[in-house]
Amino acid sequence: MEDVALGGIATLGVGTGVSPVLFEDKILILADQDDGAASFLAAVSTADGKIAWKIPRKEAVNWTTPVIVESAKEPALIVPAMEDVVAYDPRNGKELWRTEGLDSNSVHTPVFGHGMVYVSSGFPKKIVMAIRLDPAKDQPRVAWKYDKGTGYIPSPILYGDYLYVMTGAGLVTCLDAVSGEVKYEGKRFPQPGQFTGAPVAFDGKLMITSNDGETYVVKAGPDFEVLATNSLGEPVYASLALAGDSVYIRSANSLYRIRQALVNR
Image (cartoon, rainbow, N blue to C red; front, side):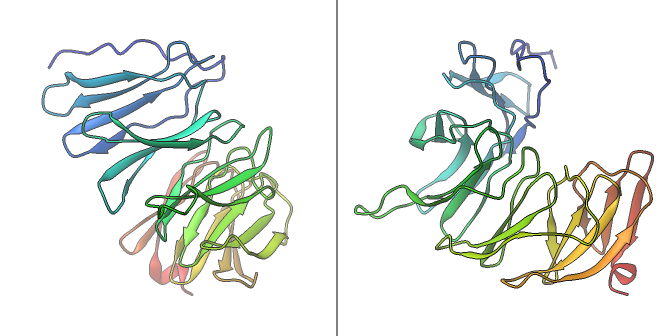
């Protein structure tokens, strides 16, 4: 297999943040950069490494990882950006629809459910938007907006009927995923800290880990309650990973595996 050159990705000097997305037999690569003059979206074949398709984009530098969602009509690659939120057919790059953008830096990974995709940003403006995947003829594409509670780096999480967003200082807000109604806002953890990783969820609980390595177990739902606090004693900047019966934690110095039986004590 020969190497395929897609070109450099210019990010205003602060590095890239977009991960490749695997769809069927293609690897999708988003390369929005600098002022948008050289931005593109491309698909590389997993069989031979050749470029299956490549389309230009006009959006400025972007650090978000797009997501594949299944709507009533076809799969769609959702790409949020400062200027627009665009849905593409991941098989050929055809634009399916577009709506208003975040008007802020696009860093968070979108989440989806309830017939909607949720996009957000924390700088320079704080914004959360719920976007309908298949709106009725009399419905706007954007279902609701919320303009508080987000941080620059931590992505939101959708769990059950609720969307949770968090600031970099760990203030947590819970929104009704369908209506956008605020259930609680700006709730704090027992210890102040900074947060980079996104929350994860299991068994009716959220797990949120600070940069200091403190993992808070929070009751999922419309009432904020910290059920437990677990400390590693070393920095953690990555999101926790759940697989099988285990939680995997990548700290500054180690990779930890914690079995479910230990988590539930």
